Length: 122
Image (cartoon, rainbow, N blue to C red; front, side, top):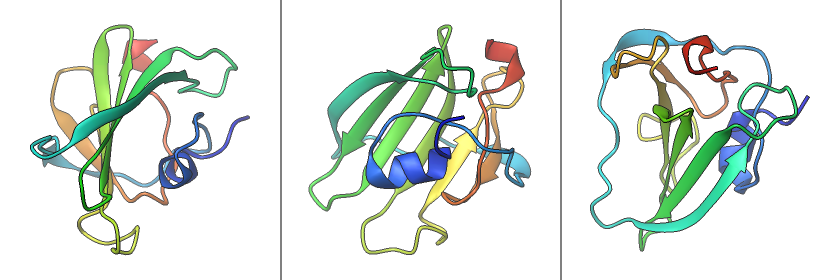
C-alpha cells in the first residue's frame, strides 16, 4: 500500500492510501485559485491498488501555500489546501471530498487524516 495522502500533500510526492479518516459532514467550497499557478500535474494511485487512476494538479502561490485537486474518471472528487507557516491541522489546512459524486464536497479532513478515492468514481 502507498503512503497516506496527508503525507503526500505535505512532501509533494505521489500516491494515496491508508484507512479512511474521520470526516466532518457538511457542504464545503473548493479553495479559490486566484493568485495560484499550476506547477505540477501527475497521475497517482487513489485507492492503493497500484494503478495510477487519479490525476493530481498542484498549484502554488507566492507565499508558498499549495492547493491540490484530484480527478478520477473525469470526476473532480477532492481539493486540499495547505498554508505555509500554519499547523497542518489548523483551520486553513484541509482536504474536502465529494463522497458520492454529486458535485458537492460534503466531507472535510485534516491533512493528517487518511482517506480513499470514493467508490463512485471507480
